Amino acid sequence: MLSKGDVLLIVDVQHDFLPGGALAVPNGDEVVPVLAQLARYAEQNGVPIVASRDWHPENHCSFTAQGGPWPPHCIADSEGASLDEDLQLPADVHIVDKATRPDADAYSAFEETGLDTWLRRRDVKRVVIGGLATEYCVLNTARDARTHGFDVTLLTDAIRAIDSSDGERAIDELRDLGADISESSAVLNDSL
Image (cartoon, rainbow, N blue to C red):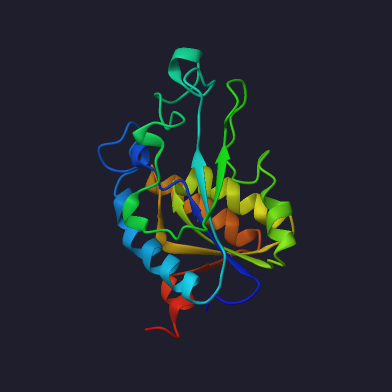
């Protein structure tokens, strides 16, 4: 269950990564109701919620026009960069913006954001993670959480991959790094 010492970390559930978006993750919308339920439960139990966002400048190095691999997506202050409203996140959600510089990409919510310090100030021991996409920002965020010494629970029903086999490899890597691979029911068990 989600309790004191935990944080719910929702990774990049933004319009551009959902169906119809500039860089849509297949079935990415399926994570939204799961994460919305988790967010309600976290809020009711006093567990902090963090939501990360890609927050790119228009000339970001990851975009094809600058020689990067991706189409333009999640441009700061655009509709595509907005978190999905159906998450129904509370007003006190802590937003972490990443990859905000034109010359540097960042797949992890920990990269140049100060998130590790923010979590330590709140005595967080375990990071419970869901979001998009499994083999990119979710993997790198969870990997960095482990590197910073946090326990990690990865919720398989709250993540989706761009490529399913790459997603499976990412889950295997995180398991090897000591992450707990579970489903949301494991952290909601006393509320069902």
